[in-house]
Image: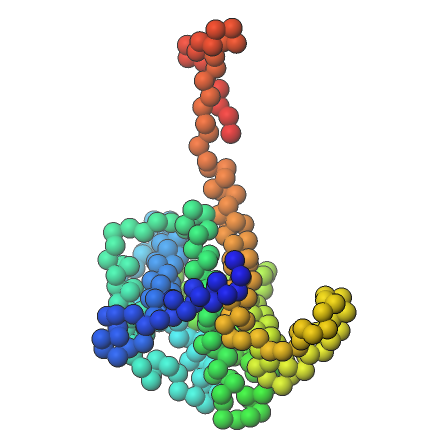
Length: 310
C-alpha cells in the first residue's frame, strides 16, 4: 500500500458526515470512530483495574456515569488545557461544545452496553490500524498548528516548543488520570503516575508523540530549523540513495504524504505492542487440535485412540 492509498483513506474518513452536518457541526467518520474507540478503551481499562485490585475487603465505589464521563474528558482535554495555559490560548472545549458533548454521549452509549470484550489480541490487533490513523492525525494535523500559528514568532519558530507541546498535549490527560488514580475502584487517591515509575519511559505513547511530530515537521519543513535539518540530511545522504540527479529529495513533503507516512510508522509500533502484550497469551491459549489415529494397514480408526497436536 502506497502513501497515496493511505491519503485516499484519510480523504474518505475526514469528510463530514450526517447527522452532525445537519446542525452545522464538522464531525467526520474518523472523529466518530476515534471517540467510540477511546470510550471503549476507557471502560475496558476500568474493568481490568477493577478485576486486579478488588479483593473483597476494601469498599468499592458504585459505578457513576458522571464520574466515567469526567475521567474521559480529562483524558481528552487534560493535556490541551495545560498546553493552552502555557501558550496563553483558549482551549478548544471552551470554543465549541461539539466534541465534549460527543465524548459524553459516546461514553453513555458504551456504559449502556451490558458488557464489553476484554482486551485481547483478536480485538487489539486489527484495531491498531485505526489507532494509527487517529494518532497520526492528532500528532500531525491537530497539535502542531497550535504552535505553528502562534502570534508569538519566538514560539511559532521554536522546535523545542513544538515537541514539548506535542508531548504534553498527547500525554497530559492520562498523566492526570494516573496521578489521581481515577481508574481505581476504591476511589481517587494521589499516586505516582505510571509514566514516572521505573521503566515508565518505555511507554510507547509517551515518546511517540514528540517523535512523530518532529519527524513530520522535518519532512514538511514546518519551521526553519526543520527545513535546514532536512536539507542537510538529504544532501549528506543523496550520494548513497540515488543516482538520479534530477530528483530533488530536499523538497518538503505535503501534509497528506507526511501524515500517511507517520500512520505507517505508528502502526508498526502499535502492532508490535499489541503482539507483545496479547500475542503470546493468544497463541498459547489456542485450542489444541485432535488428530485421529488410524491403522497404517487398512486405515481404520483405532477406538478411543486420539492424540493432541498443536
